[in-house]
Amino acid sequence: MVDLAYVLAGFFVGIVVGLTGVGGGSLMTPILIFFFGVKPYMAVGTDLLFAAVTKMGGTLSFARQRIVPWRVVGSLSVGSIPASLLTLAALHWIGPANPQVQSLMTHSLGVALLLTAAAMFYKTLRGQQLPAAHSAADPGHTTQARHWSLPVLLGALIGVLVTLTSVGAGAIGVSVLLLLYPLLPLPRIVAADIAYAVPLTLVAGLGHASMGSVDWPLLAKLLAGSLPGIWLGARLMHRTPERLVRAILSLLLAWAGTKLVLI
Image (cartoon, rainbow, N blue to C red; front, top):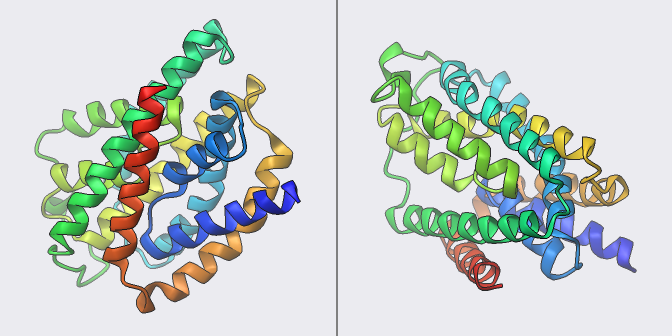
């Protein structure tokens, strides 16, 4: 029954990701901690590889449509990958099961969930007011950040946050991209957010795996549920009130974040 519960949890998260494009790391890690009693460091490590696999499929789909702004992905990765490696080195030196590290992960996860909830709720209230992409062409000015250093610095911040908590590359990443690249159409923003999350979560996940912080059988069960869930969610997207789903999801994340911060 426990195995089936893991598969169903993966299926639920997969549907939410398929419906909204976000929620994988934000939902899976607190579900593993609160409902299955998984240790925070093990939940984070397992969820990072879970996110890498699920977002890889989305990146391939966007790449086939030629809407991934690779210049943006590269700028963010220049900051996020080294930051992730430095964070992993610190975790390896201190030990992921260290009580102080566990406390840092738990509270950082709570803050990340609260930020994600706020970003998602803001987007829900604001609605989709950005122009759609009219072609696969990528004019240089749309991928020009307000300043060259900002994507690197914010990418580094997200890299640390994702490596510690497995959260941050979804709704927070989209919000950062909207601020940095105001002329970039929304479909390309989403494509960039998913594409740069793949190498980041893969590097962070493999780093956690090297420290024994990944439960491989658990990961397989979660993926067995999430992959069909994403497929179903993507097909239900146009029949579901997305703003309502996002509003409910933001409230759930705020609740989970508050509980983690107060632990």
